[in-house]
Each structure stands twice: as structure tokens, then as C-alpha cells.
Image 1 (cartoon, rainbow, N blue to C red):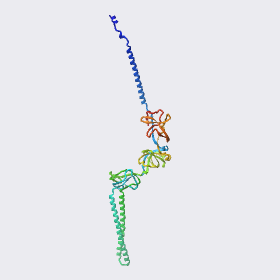
Image 2: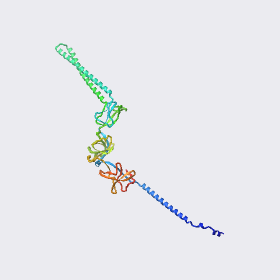
Image 3: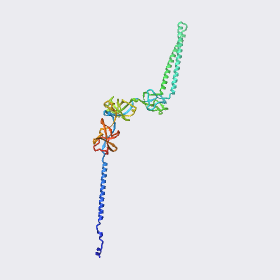
Image 4: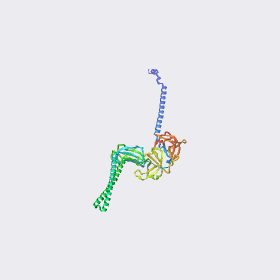
Length: 411
């Protein structure tokens, strides 16, 4: 029975399925391919990450600035401020309410000009009273002189009569006493006139003290009081003003600059200088050392120098910040030598493919920029094209530095 069952058994299930083997081979190949792609991606990510993590080179930068040809002769540069050597806060000698004010900031005033005036009704009345008193004393003098004239005539008559024996000595003594008394009255009256004149002068001074005048030719810098405010000589009250206006002689402007003690030997009186105002960096003003103050500042270890302008214009104002270049020779003012130009330090320029280029810093990367240069002055090159004032360029760029490179700004 078992043999028959074996003969009739289905042996087709024992055949090898070649289609299934092929499918398994294809699946394995696909897995290897995907693994290779994944490996390439991982390597690329790792490479990109490491390239980003690579330390950026440290670089130093310099600014593109306006350069003056005189800087080649500068032995020292100092900073300071423009200061008016003649400046005054104008106040009143008297106390009163401000009744008149004729100037504002920027107005030009002349010496002796009335800038402001206090109320003066009371002092005007006092002046009128002293003048009337003067007229009264002058009239008294005339009256006393008339009385003296009469006494003198009577004295002379009594003297003649006494000599002739026609009157007694007592009558003559009375006439003489009256004469001397009237003579004293005239002297006293004349003294009263002088006293009255002095009172008039005093009252006139009081009236004049209500006028606030300019002590010298100058320009009004500040206005400290307005009409209606109380003005006092020393502003003793919190409700009163001291100075009404502040004026300065604009022709007396000088630069006061602090020079280090270690460099003061490089500065001499009369030394030629170049003055640059921070407000107008493109302007250059010729000047010279007017005075070296003969004392040092112990706290700052500096010596104050005063530099006078050779030329002034309306752009120079008190309290402006300024720089002064102390020069080795007189500043030439011809052939445009005072005119500044756009310049950079020579150390920022390098050659690439035979052309002069610089590397301009843009945030954390640099850009290779070709430039055209001109003259060289004191370590600076004139930039004709390619850069503008304010650009930051890399100092001493290395051969491996290229456009787009990431850099780190060093100290």
C-alpha cells in the first residue's frame, strides 16, 4: 500500500524555483546601491561639515581714509578742541528785570554795542533828582557870590571910614566878620556844587549799568536770558540769571591739543602744523604752534599746546574737535599740496595675475577687488578707482587668501 502511495505522490513541489532566486539577487543589488549612495552622502556631509569647522584665518584690517600730502612730514599727531581765546559771559552790574534784548545766537556784535537793557525807571528818577539838586546848588552859589560882593563893598567902606576915624573899631569888626562869613558861604556853596556833580555822575553810572554792552567785537554763542527775567550780577537767587549772553571773538580761535610728555620735545613754538576738523575731514587748515603752556597735567601726563590758525573761515566753530599734525617743515600752500586724496596703506595692496588688488572685508568674508593707484605719500598710496572712503581692507594678505574666503578679525 505504501509503495502505491509513493508512486502516485506529486513530486512537482520538489522543483527549484529559479524565478525566486533571481528576485532575491535583484533585491540584494538594490540594497548595495542604496548603501553606496548613503555612504557618499555621509562622506559629503562630513567633508562639508569639516570644511565649515575649519578655523578661519586671523587678519588685520585698515581703513580707506582721506590722506593729506602733509602727513609725509608729520612727526606727531595730537587731538584737541577749537577754543576761543577771547570769550566772555556778559552780565549786568545791576539787578533788575530784563527789559530789552537785541541779539540772538549767531549775531555779530561790535564793541560798545548795547546788547540788552534792564528796567531803569527808578534810576532815571534818581538821575533827575540829582540833576535838579545840582541846579539848586549852582543857584545857591550865585546867591552866595552876590551876598559876598555886597559884604566886600561894605567891608571896604568901613575900612576907609576907620582909617579916617569916622567909625569905631566895633563897627569895622562887624563888617569884617560879615565879609568873612559870606566868603565861607561861597566856598561851601561851591563844594556843594561839586558834591551834586558827583551825585549826578553816580546816578548816570547807575543808569548806564542798566545797559549791557559788548566788551569787544564778537559773535553771540549762547543766549541765557529772555525779556522779563530777573538778572543779577552773581545770580544769587535761583530765579535770577547771571550772564545774559556769551560772546566770543571768532578771530581768536585756536586749537588746544594735549601732547604726551614723552613727545613734547618734538614740538617747538612757531612749528608749522596742519589742522583737520573732525566735522570736515576733507578740509585742511594751515597753522603753527602759538604757545606751549609751561606746565604739565599730572593726571594725564600731557602738556597743553595752543595752535593758531593761519587761515580761518566761517566753518570753524568753538568747541569743535580737531587733530593737528606737527610738521618738520613749513606747509606749502601751492600746487594743491593741501588738497587731500583717498588713500590706503601700501601693506594692503598685493599683486594677483600682474594686477594690483586688495581684499575688502564684507562681514566675515573678503572680496578681491582690483584698484588703480597713483602717487605714494608717507606710506600711503593714492586710490584712483576701486575703493571708497570707509572701506575696510585686509593688511598683508596671504597668498592663500582668495575672494570669498572666510576670515576672522584679529586685534
